[in-house]
Structures are given as C-alpha cells and as structure tokens.
Amino acid sequence: MPAPTNTFKQNILAGIRQMGCWVGLAHPYAAEIAGTAGFDWLLIDGEHAPNDLRSISEQIAVLQASDSTVVVRLPNDDTALIKQTLDAGAQTLLIPMVESADQARELVRAVRYPPHGIRGVGYALARASQFAAIPDYFATADKEICLLVQVESKAGLDALDDILAVEGVDGVFIGPADLSVDLGYAPSADAPEIRAIVLDAIDRIAATDKAAGILTLDPEFIAECLAYKATFVAVGIDVLTLAGGLRDLAKNARKAADEL
Ligand SMILES: O=C(O)C(=O)C[C@H](O)[C@@H](O)CO
Image 1: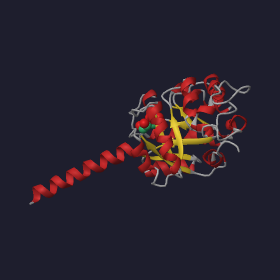
Image 2 (image 1 turned 180 degrees about the vertical axis):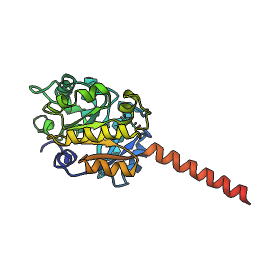
Image 3 (image 1 turned 30 degrees about the vertical axis):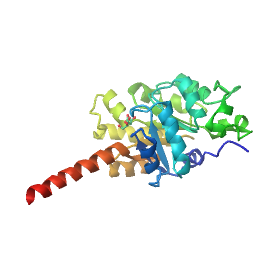
Image 4 (image 1 turned 135 degrees about the vertical axis):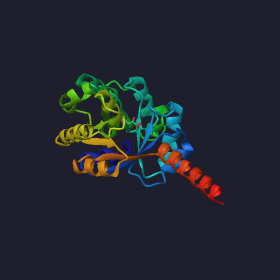
C-alpha cells in the first residue's frame, strides 16, 4: 500500500486548473467549514496566520474528510519544520521567500528521504504513514510530495530562471504583496506595472514543466492569471470573507436601526 496519491500535484503539472482559498483563521473548526466549500485546495497559512505545528496538524486532520487538497505554507524554509509538517500528513508545501536556486535545491533535499534528500525517517509515529498502516510509505512518499516555492522579491524574480531549472521544484507561486513592496509599490499589487511583472513571471513559469500559482481576490486578474496558464490560483481568504461579511452585516443593522 503506497503513500496517498497527490492528485493536486498531478493536476497542476498536467495543466488542470486548481482553484483554492487561503485558510487563516487558524482553528480546526474554521478549517472544517472551509473544507465543505468545494475548493480544489486550501492553504493553511503558517506564515501570516497564528498557526503552529499543533494547530496545522489539527487542521490537516479535520480536512482529511474534505475533497480539498491541503497545502501548508510554512513561515520559512526551516528543514526541521518541513520534516515535522510532512510527518503531520501534509503532502504539498508552499515555502515563502525563495530567492536562489541553491535555496530551492536545499528545499528539494528537505522534502525527500535519503539517498535523494535529508528528510528524517520517523513516519512510523506519524499521520503521514497513517501511523505505520502504510508499510510502503518510505519507498513511495517522495513521489507524492509537491514542493511549491514562493518568488516574492526582486532577488527571487532575478533568480526565477535558475529556480525553474531546479529538479524537484513542482511549482512557483508569485507572492504579489511582498513582490510589490520589494519593487517599491503599494502592497495591494494593483499597480499595472506589478500586474505586468506578475503575468510575465507566470508566463515564464508556465513555459517550463512546472506549475504557476498566485493569490488574487480580483476577478479580472484571476481571469488574466488563468489565461497566462497559472494552474493553482487562490481566489479568497477566509479571514477577509468573515471580517468583511460581519462588517457589512453590522453596517446594515445600524442603517436599519437608524432608519426607524
Ligand atoms: O506576498 C504575497 O502576496 C503572499 O505571499 C500572499 C500573502 O502572504 C497573503 O497572506 C495575502 O496577503
């Protein structure tokens, strides 16, 4: 019995568009709700949401019942945290602020077992092997791991072609807010100059054997990124959907109360 098949990895590499959502409420109950929405993938954000390994693990557990693929973004490229998160059952990782081919190569080694990498062998204790219920986990795990790296700085953009040449990187996600700021623009990533740079990067990624990804809430830019062959596109953020919806509700309630 092999490691679970990573259909998300298969789909993005086959050019089959996967539509996703950011999950930043950092609680399994909220993740469970997101898991019923019908997204192809859900990003558990360990970088900007108040998550730690335990809360990420709890969200992975509840999302096993969902048809959405779990993608976990870690706060950085720490190999120990990569090991722990893979053991917790994540098969797709998004690593922020990747700025060189050397860094990308180290990440490939971190998600692979020896002799092709340095991932520590402890799956017998872990959800990844269904607590040793998958006897062939060690031999089959590497193939089902999907490594996505974030290019979100000028340095990363300058190194994009070198990063794309790294075997074992499956996809490159363009971080629009951080990239905008690093290029001297507002973090909204709405500037036409930034959008042109992002679309050019997506074009360059899609011209290789790797997948291009992005997060944008703007329906027009979503369509543009898909037209440029981005294949993993996040179109929402749970925190903003909740906060915005509650603000509108409160405003309408106040309006109704004041009109009487
Ligand atoms: O730079 C970006 O944009 C991203 O990496 C996405 C943000 O971190 C996400 O939290 C939305 O702001």
